[in-house]
Amino acid sequence: MNSYTWAPGQLINQAQTTFVGLLRVLSIPIVLMLSAASGFTTYYGLSFFITPWIALIITIAVQSIIVICSLEIASIHWRANPLRYLLVSITLLVSVAVSVSFSYFKFYEISEKETIELQRLAAMKQSIGEYLKTILDAKAALIKEQQTVADKAGEEANLAFLGTHPSMKEKHRNKVGHGPFWEQYNKIHQDEVSKVDLLAEKFKVLTRQIGDFRIRLNSLGGRSDISQDEYQTLVSQYTAVQSVFENIMSDAGHAFPAAPLLLPYAEYTQGFKPSFAMWLAFSWFAFACAAMVDLFTIILSYRLEFTAPGPLTEDEQELAYQCLREFKELRINHNDELELVIEKTELERARKYSDWNRSFGAAYLLNRGYLRKIDDRTVEFAPNLYPIIASRLGTSQVDRASVQETPLRDEPPRSLKDTVQRLYHERRR
Image 1 (cartoon, rainbow, N blue to C red):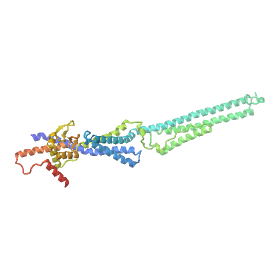
Image 2 (image 1 turned 180 degrees about the horizontal axis):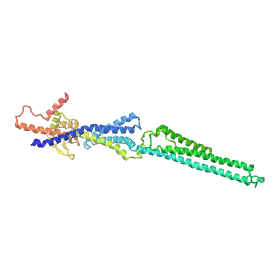
Image 3 (image 1 turned 90 degrees about the vertical axis):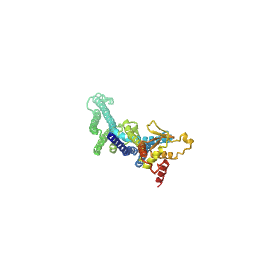
Image 4 (image 1 turned 120 degrees about the horizontal axis):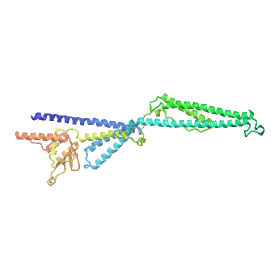
């Protein structure tokens, strides 16, 4: 009945133990993969500012320090060694700050690349659009100016025809007709009119070129994968517009504004290049993604160290059991862990009790990670120590029952001193 009752419970307990053990085993490759992912993004950001091989070395050092410091913090208590805890915490914060700062550039690129490319293209279109508007404004002003000159020449020709021109001699005044005086001013008028027509024709050609260039420019859209021939055609059209306009303004004796430069093809199609200016346009999403990877690395590394490493041998388990039985002051602390006082009691001090074996066992378990130091006088159990003591307690109960039913064996029970000496000699061998 008991076997039947406890069989499902034993099965559930075994499944849970296997699952927890599997998670602990999987924590190691997960920590390594997270560290590698964070290292890649950190290296990506660093490589834009320093030599790649130096960036690689710094990245490996930073990621190693993050994992090591996470493991260190899990194994120490600030009350036990506040200076060491503070130094490890500061080192961890500095490493995380370096990792997150340069990882931020990669996540910023992923989240903001399309937006930045569109802004860059929009800025280029805006500067070119302002330049083209300047050309059209100059066209209207120049034609108006030339038309004014032609109209003035026409008025003078008309006065010369009527004989009322101010510069005419008295003997030629008030004589209407096509005389030599009129022919001279009429020739000037025709020249100015022909200049207006020529200027209008030049601007007509320029306007057609501007139209073709606008169509080509608008066809870019948000693309950065434009072919080199297509982009070169755009540059050629822009250069032609610029050249015609500058010639027209030079012929008219006017200064012309400087044209904005188009980005070279290599720069227009180049990948995203990080800069510290990205911190001005701060992206919380990119920062959260960069910090999240390092946060998961720290949490898993901390949890990995929080559970004690490698199993103890039979002799080491016996040593742990015999050692912990020597402690007198035990309690359950606020972490729900069994806490031991490793200092001598007042009675032990009065009796000058030698606790060398007990202290050795406690230091051995601290070194192996099965005990965690809380402060100078107390330690607490690590999670993996409970099943070891539980198995020993169960064995001792069975041995005690067998002693009551069978006569004493010839072999005396092993003391803590014998266990320590045997373990010491085995280690030496």
